[in-house]
Length: 112
Length: 254
Image (cartoon, each protein chain N blue to C red):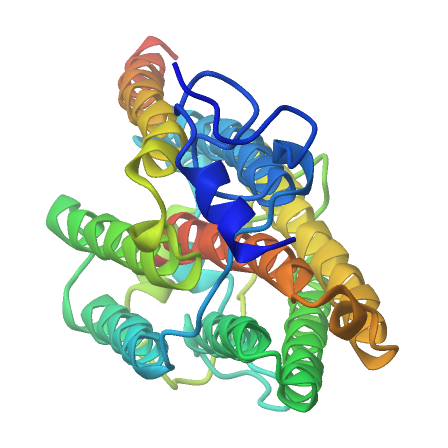
């Protein structure tokens, strides 16, 4: 293995990658998408009666919003895939926990 | 720090140590790790909320989970009118807008434009403060209506259901006698805990933004040659917005 830089000469502790502006176009686009989804949620809320389908729409668009906030605003889309994966993969397990506990919670209803 | 040194640094063997395998600075990586742990904190609160809510879905009516539309239906300066979701939508808009000004500050930081960073940081701080004000009003109204951490006055009776199902958006609204009874306790408790925890995060975010703004004004980042601190504060601020997306979905929409 080759080490072009000797340890201590320039190390990870004071490494600041050079960043460049990519313009504000993507950011404003994301803003309009987020605003649009919020208004859409508002319309759906009064348009449809409460149902599992309506809840599915809300959760689905909540996840879409999360994608845009994390991807564009928090810049994770443009980071190395390594970093994106260590952030995103653990959160998959949360989904499993939610599914499991909602099922159990529902079962408790019938035990009461 | 010559550019050639940095380029060589990024070409070192990825996992052999002495470099960042993620091509981000130490501080930013640690901010991401902190946000991941914070995501788990909020997830555990929301999972708790979901389990409690799903365990109170059927009759008898008194143990049923209250309908958020019948409770969070107030708007400042408009009294006695049924306006569900309107006020939280305004709060959501404020938070999204302050997220945008934050990301514009980050972008200005990439161009080393100190004046613009200052302008956008001020706007972000104002947005955060407005959101906190809205949340204080929301809590004040909810407590005024009789909500407490250890009890829930929003169990709705059969009569209450009949009464509430008839009102539409914008109708005059007030609770009649016999509409309400004691309901599932976790309803108000979890509302206070989760929105309180989120509100505390917003408060910390505003404090961090104020500190970063003062550092910008004093030229600390200009001397340092880069505005990375804005990015780190920005990551935290967007995370707070992200959490609000889910609080908004689970506490108000569903």
